Length: 525
Image 1 (cartoon, one colour):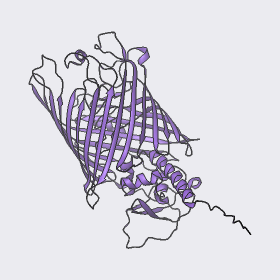
Image 2 (tube, one colour):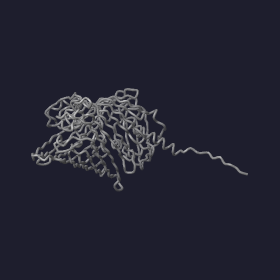
Image 3 (cartoon, one colour):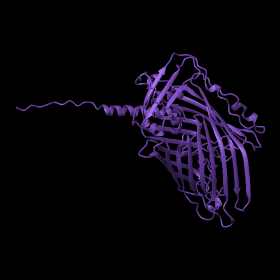
Image 4 (cartoon, helix red, strand yellow):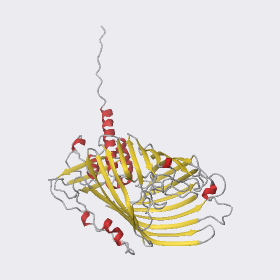
């Protein structure tokens, strides 16, 4: 007699768990990006490693509720409709050293006092969250003194509106933030004819932002920025839709470098930003340099006018930027002989797709494309001939642990190619067509001591490469930088750099060489 056995397929709980981890990882990434935090910055705030954040956002392990809720609070969002589970309200073992501890003291009569602790182990974490009775708290930020900057000659009227007061208590969902960067810069230039010039000054950049939620998924943001120097000879507020120089604002000038509306739904993977904004796409190392789009580097103040559409997928984030270029000049570093006087050159296109999901040691992969129609004058600005300027780049970063401690080695690289380049006669670098290939490589040692990092970068930029705010055309660059993250709000940097020309016309006596250094501090609030 034959008997048959009926088997019942059990649901795959591990697959369901992975799916939930993936969904919460995506939502955590969206919340982090809404806080204007990069992965390194978020890792500093949460006191975990960047690898841990990669694992959370990739869905490798569950995102701690405390970390996710903190991101949502910082973004000014609401949590109830996003929380799928309640975590145990019990405490961690007192002997377990927490990697993160924070008390929320934002002044509010309606928010609960929150205390978070996150303890990480191999990228997966256990969490604790405690909520106490709702009560009013005084802001701990309001007790932090504003850093004193060396007295500037006649500069106080220009920055009074920026730096006199920083309101901390927010009305509704509006928030204030900003940063102040100040330091000493020194440079020595050897011209082609052998002339040597030196320059030393104290420099500062101050920025103050107001941003908030308008309702229905709409947000607004505005920011004022000023660039100051002890050797400046002017004070002016810049109202125009083009930048006054190749590095944006000149010393002693201020402007509105952000003013945009953004649509961003909490449940949608895409967002749209229209107006004036900051867009930066650097290599993910300690120096964040780029061969193309990279607004407001160092002390510079640049911006982008146009529309920015973003799509956040499970592993890749894609960007489309339509950039307006004024006929009198661009708003960022787009170098001559790029010219935008022709009507068909008013709108440029920037495309990028990036993944920071870790694959082995690789922690960043990015490809970009820049298209500036009818903007290249290959024979120089005086010649009417016009061509499109098209360039592509590829960026990558990889990281390995060094030893048994927290020290890590990160290798970064980027290569770029331009399809059409100007003639060297227009660039004053010789004869024939300018070169089209540029590249950079960086070597970074992170946490050589707690919160200390050192990086070395070398790059060779072709005389036909006209897009970078970090690299001049026809330059060989060698730079060393030290970074100390003193506190989540404070960072100190020191840099020494040498730049030297690569190609020369026959009439040049020697290559131009620039040696410079700076020591600077940055305070973010």
